[in-house]
Length: 247
Image (cartoon, rainbow, N blue to C red):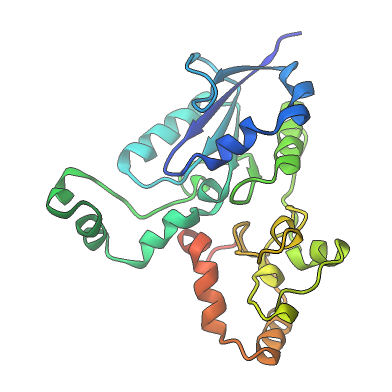
C-alpha cells in the first residue's frame, strides 16, 4: 500500500505546535505506519519534493509568505492549518492594531526599510484550508483525530459550542467564581477545556463560537462587575486578524 506523503511547514510563529506534535509519542505510532514524512523542520533535516498533505503552522505576515503558501497549496491535495497563528492569525494579529510603518520602525529601528510586512492573515485568508486544528498550542488528541480524518478523506468540523460546555463536563469550578476573567463562554470547544482543567483561564486561542450567547456573557460580566471592553481586549490577543469574521 502506497504511503501518504506528509509535509509540515511553518510561517510566522514560535513553532510550538510543531514541538507539540513531535512530543505526542504513542498516539502517533499507528499513523506513522501509514504515512511518509517528507518535511518536518523540528524533527528532521531531510526535505522531500512531492507531498500529498501539507500541515501548516504560522500566520501570513509578508509578501514572501503569501507567495510561498500559494505554492504549497498548489502542490498539496489536502492542507491542514494547525495552531492559532494558522487558524485565526494568533498573537501575530496584534500587529494589526497599529500602522504597519509604525510597527516596522518600532521593531527594526533605523533598518525598518529593510523589511517588508503586510497585515497579519490566517492561512485561509490567502488560500483554501481543508482542515483546522485550533489552539495555542494544539491539543494533541484533536490533532491526531484531524490527521486521521485527513488521511481517510473524512470530514472533521471544529466544535461550535463554548469551552464552558467541556468545562462543566469536567466538573471544574468556574473561573469567574474564583475571581478571575475567563473567555470560555465565547470560545470554541474541542480542547477538552485543557487550560481550565489545569487551573488556568481560557484565553480564547481557539477563536469565537459563531453564535455566542451574548446575553449570557453580559449577565456574567454584570454579575462580576467586569467591563465588556476588558473581555474583548483579551480576545484580541489571538483573534485580531479575523476581527469581524467568524473564526
